[in-house]
Length: 305
Image 1 (cartoon, rainbow, N blue to C red):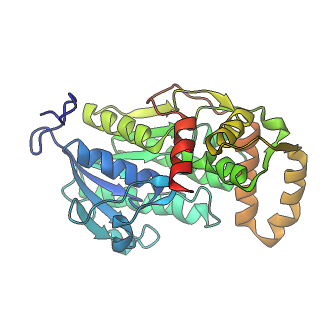
Image 2: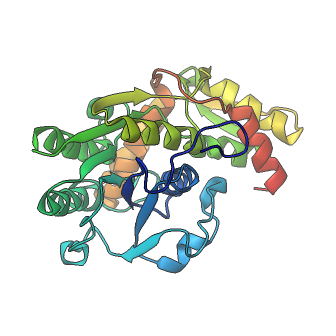
């Protein structure tokens, strides 16, 4: 069946999958739901707030029209609320995570995913696809350690699994757009670190294709364009039609701030550790998709945010 643009789509009921998407109201989760629905698959969205799904998400993530998929209410931090959510599905996709927030990553990324995996195993059948972080086990932050620890459990479990390790999202780089809009971008260590972040829609398509093919194991993935953080900041100014104003601070300053922060707020300190690593270390993975960051920034400028 064609979508009218010459692209083949899954026929509902013929090789179509029924997929539970956890974290369906998040940036990536929305893209996963939208992509699966567009390709003729059936989706069960696990959410805490069912009304939020029909609203546009952060960084331009799509709203999911009411009635387009099955919606179930549950919270991965409350295992009892997950009872039965994986019954009758072919695949469970976990896009839950606390990256960018100060919530406890061990409560959500680790114990929450463990609860979801336990329910998946109880349902006896679904595969489990998990969105991790590229090289997360090497980053000295609870944000990534919690995710990496769950990934290790998943690899040792009896579940058929797919672990997707993105190099970063365009939405992560929206911070440069917001700073550029204010007139000044602050980089760390000159913005020399390289990355190839991927658009949520492109990553969702990668995940869906692997689900359709039934492939498993670990898959590293990034966007089609490798750039430095300085180049990303310059692209944000270009999208806004502004002259670049960029300054740099040494990473040692951020690391020094982290020390007193650890005592006052371990969660914020962990987030700081993650940010320092993301801003100072290369994060480059095999390329996929065709969306580039400059186009994403142009979309942000058109939306006025």
